[in-house]
Amino acid sequence: MCSVACGCYTSVDALAGFIVYKLQLEFNPVTNQVAVDALTYALCVLLYVNYKISCTQPTHNVLEFESSKDCVFAQLALADDSRYTIKRL
Image (cartoon, rainbow, N blue to C red):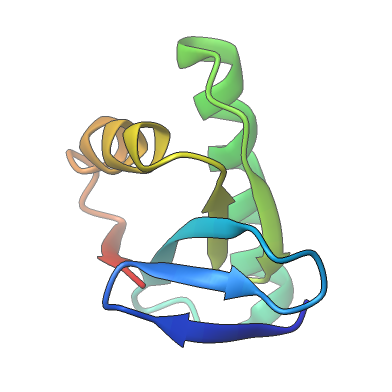
């Protein structure tokens, strides 16, 4: 996906022209991208099943949301796990 930085919390998709909100997950000490991809996907499914928050996964460690509300709620919902750290992009 082609994105450019737009402020400190959002990105604009250059192809579609809409704003997306992103969370980056850092799994330490896991460095294998395939493993991180699977763990990130599992969190995406967890967010949908538990909270009805839809998101997409453009890269192995990033989740994208259509609204700021969903992004903030997801950040709060995922914040209590010590297996990873979360950073808003």
